[in-house]
Length: 506
Image 1 (cartoon, helix red, strand yellow):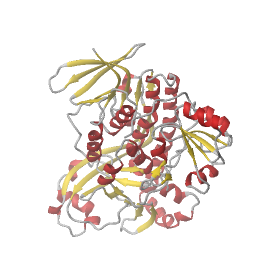
Image 2: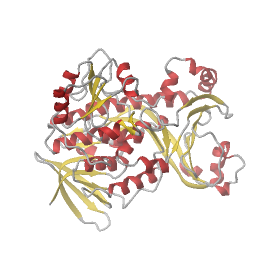
Image 3: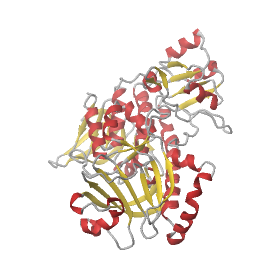
Image 4: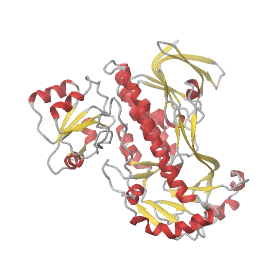
């Protein structure tokens, strides 16, 4: 029986990201995907600058920029298409080095993820492979799968299995986990259209707050457009696969453009849910992405959460496999990611409910309140700032219980020198960011532990970041999150783990 260190179930964005990150650390992976190749239908269309940063870590900085469009933020519209409120996002590089929000076509993203993966001999992608069982013992996991092209039954043995197999996850069932409903279920029509015509609309996300039917519009590519409309009881997507029946819904944006110039790629029904798995790991099997959480799409965080899962887990698993980290660090994956995912789901529920609920009464309230939302302290930041909540306390996030600080937050991907940013310098290693001079003994110890020392200049972005966090130094993990921060470099640098094998440069 073939033996590999890691089997990844599912070759969607989460699985491909996890495989690439592991490959950068030299970890051999086998991806088993039930589809023959890339699933052709568009699904996710948005990501933020934190996740854009993960794509750059994979080596896809320029490739993703070529297939994506920075979006300008969010407009809340009434039934007559009047702007009730506007929350702009910066399309120029921000704290993480990228636009705060980007729109894209998921099949194109998966194509560049797969192409990028061919650079790593450590990863094998096998299509037409439907996993049928995961069986654990003390030393590993037996993975049974069926070759759907021949019907042949095969098995492989792995030290660890990552279940990136979506909402109907077999991996989640195998570990005895269930999805906990968080109280949000809505049926929506999702429509993807291609046209060479320019609709001449504002280049952001439009949220239509019409009591008769809430809707969303966005341009996701040069010729690609996405609409989403809430379905009424008794309606299905079948009602709108005919362009003539769909046209009245989208004509607010298409105007006089003839129906013949619109090609409908897809008109499908989706049930938007808010759910969270009650456990994310059983011994050697982990669940990531939609297998672990489902987020309503109102803040564009569904796929983002899966890539964050992969970024959080990959370096820890690589360290355990090469013996530089103890297996107990794997316990921090669920502690850190479950809390963060739950916070983002709650935010998506809040935004979705505020924009779509209440019928005619809700519409009246929105018309009265929305123009004054910018006066509510903190609300504009909530809608325009792409920063997500910090990770909670864990063995790899060390901070005082009662005082917030930098620990658990992402270190900004600030420019260090020339055009090199923090991620270019850290290069997937632990880093010590400090505004004070390190002594010779401290520098030697930091180097011995395989970390990089980043001395920040007064007045620089990272210097200001440390000062805002009331710190003079911070230990930053390979995923960019702060392990610990404070004023005593001599104490902080001891929080570094033993040397972790550095990843291959993307």
